[in-house]
Length: 528
Ligand code: G4P
Image 1 (tube, helix red, strand yellow):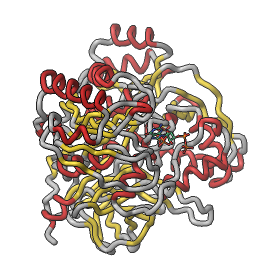
Image 2 (tube, rainbow, N blue to C red):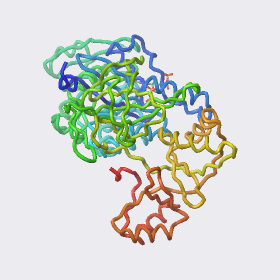
Image 3 (cartoon, rainbow, N blue to C red):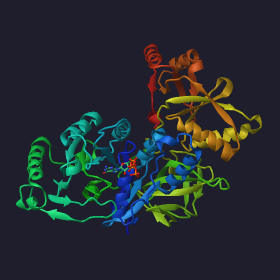
Image 4 (cartoon, rainbow, N blue to C red):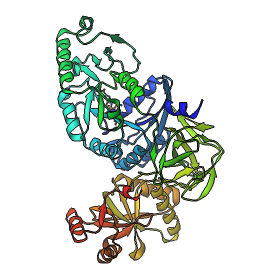
């Protein structure tokens, strides 16, 4: 098969949601439709249960599960679907943000009872930053949730994206009868069945077809007709380009656990969602159809087995064909590397592959060569854009508890931050190491892993910073002046960019006013 055909076949996306909205359940139903798993329950929820904040065994288990489910590929209707999994726990949000740089589109799951939640807002912000096409699945329609039109309004207002419903629920809660597919004009009526795939689709001419009355109670038919009429007046018909540009989100309703509305979503997704498209690198735009390989590392996972220190680096292929055992160029390290056992992930199994194509994710065994954001090419010097670090929210200084293990501690902290577990900043006075994270849980993970994988002991002493801001400017003198004046609040990130630690929103605002020539960034996206 030629490269072009392989590219057109691929749909690489992530399912994102606030924890508990139903992401794992929906993923599992997709895998059932794709035949990648045979029974429900095969995909373990990759979230750390809320009660387990300090349960290290649970953290270890989680790490094991998330390697296995990092990418789930399956074939469906002649397409190769790559689902990139994202951790549900909010303390691992940074990991999710990075995964979003490796997908071509997303499906956002919203709980019909709870509506738009905090984590949904953050995730959508990242999607909007890169104009990622979004489809929305409003889940749990079998529960007594919010009014359907109100939910759409909430999504539009809070997520600042236009919505267009492509299916519509027939009833809700205990009276939920299935969904009407506005796009294809058919009815999908399901029995509540938690494990079976159902193909019971009833084609009708339109919502006024009397055929519908055979299947749906009169009152619900009436309501459905009214709703569809209203929709036709209020919502525009979908222009696929608006979806592809990230301006409009098609919306589906259903109940993942009961398999209501999932097939409609998957089928329309296969039809409309983009195959891999051109990607912006700092130097130029890279087309997927280019024959030479390019790709970038968006995730690094440490091996669970302490006897094997290697890690798995996840490479998203952007162009060309990846081949096993071929030499590729590691741009940052300026060296050639080849991979004898690159892994692909089918369903929940991992296997060695001979080749892979744009949109695919390949797991590369790594003994410490990779950092998140690294680019691989066939010799060209290229850096893919947009793998940002966000300003952490919790800051702590690393305090060494075993002076004989200083080297191990340094190495451990460096490698863990390269994996993206947390961010590290160095404060030059006294060579202080500051770790910044988005959640408390990371500190538990770091401490535990430093001890068990590197034999180093440390504690963390809390620092009362509000935000870390990267600074850019054309005015060198002003920056030097700022650094001098704020020296006790200045540090450097791993690429030696100056970072200002603001104590509060007020200090940050004052700094901005006093030094108008400087720009303060709360994400490192500016670097690209
Ligand atoms: P997440 O990955 O987004 O965190 O959510 P997950 O799929 O784990 O689902 C969260 C909870 O919501 C689960 O219940 C799941 O069974 C339930 N759920 C998923 N889809 C639906 C739906 O369509 N309707 C209803 N009513 N519930 C749904 P749980 O009690 O937390 O876990 P479990 O014991 O059922 O696995």
